[in-house]
Amino acid sequence: MLELQNVTRRFGDFAAVKNVSLSIPEGQMVGVIGRSGAGKSTLLRMLNRLIDPSSGLIRFNETRVSALTGAALRGWQRDCAMIFQQFNLVPRLSVLMNVLLGRLNHRSTLLNLVGTFSVEERAMAIAALERLGIAQTALQSAGTLSGGQQQRVAIARALMQRPKMLLADEPIASLDPLNAKVVMDSLRNINREEGLTVITNLHTLDTARNYCERVIGMAAGEVVFDGPVSELTKQTVRMIYGAEDTELSEEITSTNLGGAPAAEEQSVGSLVPAA
Image (tube, rainbow, N blue to C red; front, side, top):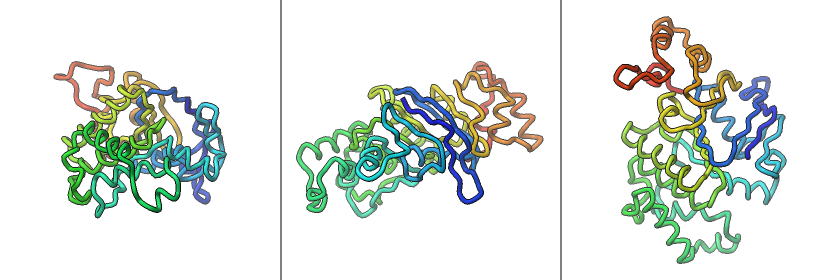
């Protein structure tokens, strides 16, 4: 169980995240939605402890995540794997080596300095690439791959950490629709097959509706909705996305959020602005 109690992050006088309290059971796939600047990325980076909360408590099972330092913090960042919008691969290294880098926090400093990996680790890496349908790229330089392929390499690298939780910060924001589907399918399969908690920031409600069992809506650093997509109201959608434009507001109002047949329903995800 992941728990947040009154978590706040300030940058000077500006509160990017304000008094967020959440409980996320293990095994859920959660989508965090909202406009740019809503606090989505800041929230995920606090969960991984890439940035520290200004106040509040983050706990995972019996571990007080917000208080970790040193080796214990590095251990948490291994257990709480992070996938980024810009992939964060080393372009000149092979795909296989990029995936193997996910094992660094499992190894001694001496082995990391030597830079050698065991046969078992290499087999794990190939298996992860096969699972994501890109084993044929193993010996290519990562920089030669398409954006969608690079994101799948990043997911394979995260899996090499053997994490307890997977965070994805706008994993499909820079991808075309086909590659976005492949990446989201991969995350959903990992969630279902491994029982791994997946928390992902998404820029459209449509994607959250199709892939996530739970949606957290953020606006101006606060959680303004938390529940299944089926419980989102038109008023809440306006609150999350700040639909002040008259035409946009009318389109959202006319949309049936209650689950009309696909042939008759207009996608709310196509109506709201990207994050």
